[in-house]
Image 1 (cartoon, rainbow, N blue to C red):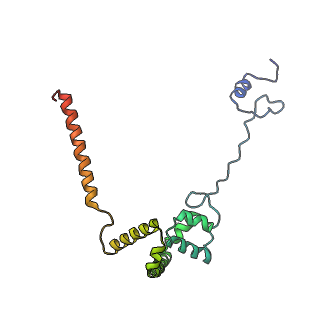
Image 2 (image 1 turned 30 degrees about the vertical axis):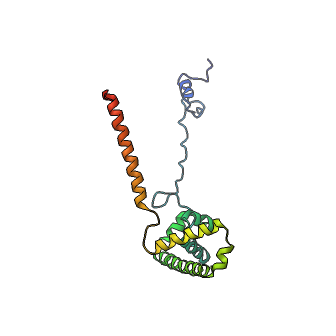
Image 3 (image 1 turned 90 degrees about the vertical axis):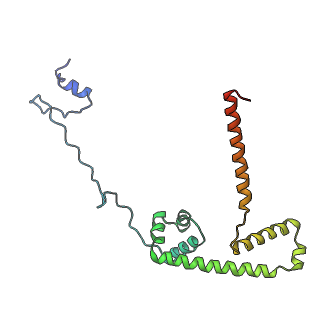
Length: 187
């Protein structure tokens, strides 16, 4: 070993601690310099402050209202508007936005009713005869479903579904009974 290494310095180096060089003439190592602390920039809530929140523009608000009234999700609205889903959720949760979405839905509903009525009125015997079989069958089924819905009647025959479920349940019960009898040894 050389004179510059001391027995105390070797274990410290092996452990990964770096000691400051000894001042000339003293022979004892100097304690390491303190590491500066990181500056944690946190807000009152303990989170990093994000970018400043800019309010939605009038155009963005109108787009949010229109898309929400049309049934689009908040994530889809956020992508279209170019804002975060949180900002869209915050805006659409306000009383003002809720009322505007409700009014917009009512307006859209009325417009669709008027268009549907105009289309229905425009269908006459000549138009029906020009349609192919698939178009006639589809149109007939749609008209029948709408008529049932408007009359407050179900569009499916629930009794048939219940009968099918009862038949399946009875078949399962018979299968369980058969397996039980086989396990008991009776034919």
